[in-house]
Image (cartoon, rainbow, N blue to C red):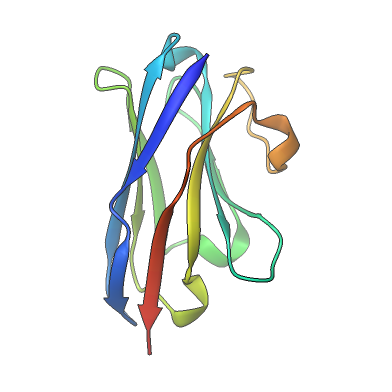
Length: 125
C-alpha cells in the first residue's frame, strides 16, 4: 500500500508559476514510477507527466512540454511538478499517482494503482 498526499495548489494569475508536491508513504517509493494527472470540471482525467523510478526518464503531455517539469527526490519520498507560464486552461484538480512498474512511462490512468486526493490549481486570466 502506498499513500499519496498532494500539496502546493492554489490560485495564481495567468503567466505565473506553482510547484506541486506529492509526499508518499508506505511501500518503497523508489520502486514506483510516479505520474501527475489533472481533471477539470466536466472533463476526463488527463495525463500530465510521468517519471521513472530512478528519475532518469520522463514523459510529458504535448501541451505541457516546455512549461511543466516533473522531478523526484527518492530520499524524501516526494515527487514534484513545477508549472510555469500557467494558463487559465490549466485550471484543474491535480493528482499524483504511483505505478508499480517503476521502469515504464505510462499515460493512461488505468496503469496506476495508487492515487492521492488531489490539489486544486486555479489560474485566473
